[in-house]
Image (tube, rainbow, N blue to C red; front, side, top):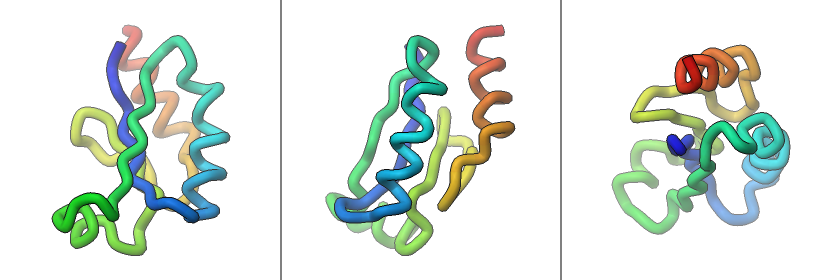
Length: 80
């Protein structure tokens, strides 16, 4: 099953909300990989205050808030 990455940080309310919102949409279609940007300097530099950032296969899907249309397009591409 393909992975969707969520770049996040502990204690980020927006991150927690996005993860809760995306979970039922990807269940059975993709795995979520939640990555703590504070564990790597390069992630801190790249994502900083932009979290949460959602990516699939290195491609940007959305940041801050879930873009359901962009996610649906990615998921349809995985399945189709």
